[in-house]
Image (tube, rainbow, N blue to C red; front, side, top):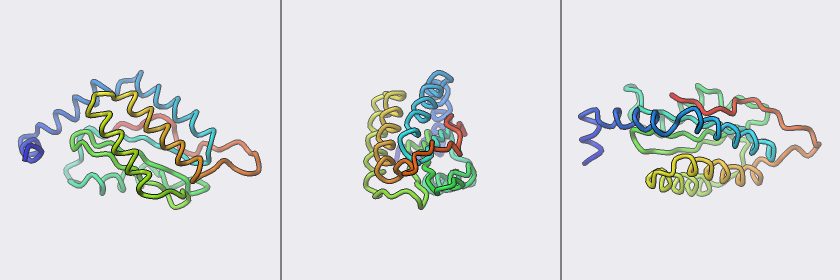
Length: 165
């Protein structure tokens, strides 16, 4: 009921914008980018973090929006089909992870990471929660998208900097 009230009054969008401005500043985004860059040296996965303050009016379902963002940011367009999107819909308080077909991981693994990040964000542990989520995704990718066996350096097909939508 309270989420419906927030959506009808527009409060959810105000809250999402405030959360993004307050907790996802340049310093936080730089820390995240560095963590992503370091983690990608240990596996062949490519992680993109997308943070959206307010779902666009054409998409009310955060899961569908995450799929749309996965496509629009071309997370699927990696040489080994190893892209992973960590998507946060701040106004809806929803988190989704979408992995490309080259990643071998169980949905339960992604769900655990999302639940833990949800708890961390609810406790206002924004940076540490996101860094923990990236580290957890790295662990999954070390198993499900291991480093290349030929010893070649991993490529970096996608940007490491989080995307603000």
